[in-house]
Image (cartoon, rainbow, N blue to C red; front, side, top):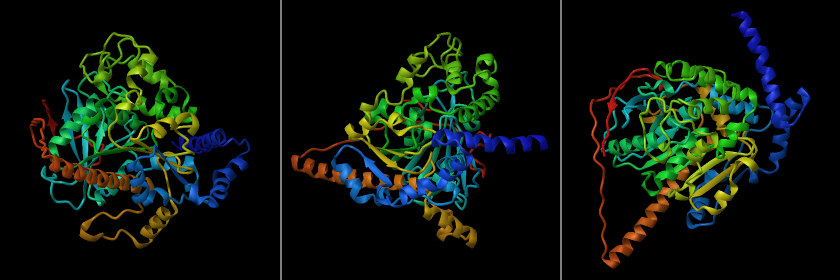
Length: 493
């Protein structure tokens, strides 16, 4: 055991040096350490006003956002000799570092039309005595889609905590087999197949019909959210959406978007998750899956090879299948024609904000990985581009100060029993302000339409879908990765 710890202590600095030299363009370790902190700090201290840039097509909504979203221009990244000034270190911290969340989760296992299961983890505050929120609640629902690897990160947990403090009902969507979701069919979800998410959204609308629905995705999970919004169009039930550090050009990202240390870690994590699913044991091509050393090789062995564990062709167009290992071989390019997140981007009918940093070490170079033409030509897409921030990091000076003050004072009880945070992430403040501003804008537009309709003597109506479920879930103080099945829900149109 001691030998492994020593080896780990040696390997980690070497990997960090290699990654830093690759992304920062330095060869000397001393120069690397110097550039990890000081140059970017000195470069941007005199350019604070240019730290954030909102890129979008001019419109009435864009003008409204610029006027009412003060967080967009109030970003002061960490500078100086601190590890939070490093894009790579703060990205690793938000992704891998454990976080003792003060919230608890209630899990709903939703049974899909093909008998598969996806899990919805509802975040509730620890002080709440009520086991479940009333279906008559008018509180807005925040649907959170984690990264495509199923890892519940520190960033997701802090977002749940912040959303609860602002009156939202956060719910985390877990794909099949992700985050200890039981796998009941020999079918995994393709990268950009929104069929399962569509059924989950219908159930959420049934459970909370009076509250507005907002959506947030993290990292590569943005591929699923963008696919859903593009495929469903105006029938998405979502009022507004935000993508935190999204990966846009996913095919090229899988092919050459990550350096080998990060790829190796992600591939190893996926192998461990796949090896724990007994349902897939007889269907997986173990030689191909466990010999893959890259993200492309692993994705290709799961979905493109003969006998892959996936739905038959056509799943990306909205049809779900329960086939036990289709024997159809799909080429890599055809697979991405069905799963590229931006394939139906012109059909998106709601405002979508993307929060990105130019120094993102996971997404890659901004010029080649961010589709600037999309934000400049499509009135529904807005890009909040920062100079610093890393991947889902966006650490600020005020956040560090709040964390230090919180640690000095201690864990004091907040008013009304609310949980007290050690500092709210800037990107979380920005997305909540974006939701508020878009809601106010649409409310004003709706009032104007109603006045015009009354003048013309017109009226309107509403219709809904029938949704039934069986069993009642229970609330236990368990983490989001609980093995317990609290409820199984069936839906029908």
